[in-house]
Image 1 (tube, helix red, strand yellow):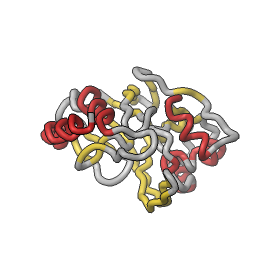
Image 2: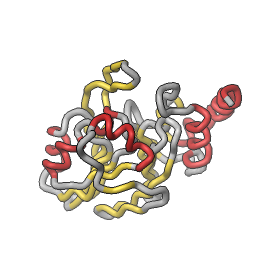
Image 3: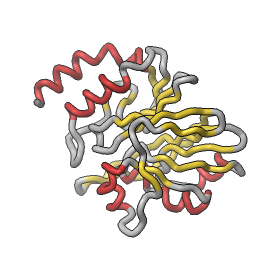
Image 4: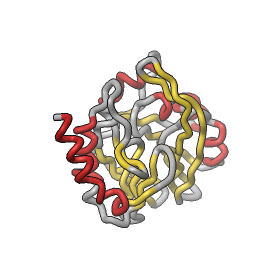
Length: 209
């Protein structure tokens, strides 16, 4: 079972602010769930979770718009927060006095409500960016690594375009073409829909090396 909650707020980095709509994904069954990316407003997420147990609040990366509701959501649901340690410097900007509860690790397997999610380290948008792959159901939660239309944004602090192209090529485009890509912002896509653009991304990547 996959449920989408959309919240609106501000993404802030390098002294600039941007209005954004974020996708929050609630994954599990009628008994337990995980929440992927606690953005902006915890209240609609609490409503979506209802009385189910929350195994974890998983951050696909540490940008403020993906974690700025994490602490209050964790307190409301009694759930731990998981983040890849390479994004701790981004986390600490938002939460200087509160650490995540656990580290995400490449290859880690998360079992929740009959769903199996495997952590794929996909740096580039940020050093600790991850995707979550549900192989049996043919779904990957891509955070801000891959969107409908191409790679996530780079060019700001802690991001790198050649690295994100490498991550997409090596970790995501090897998945079956029909795999649904459920993104951190905007509409979903599929691996097959995005794969034909790889040569253009590779050319831009080479130009930046």
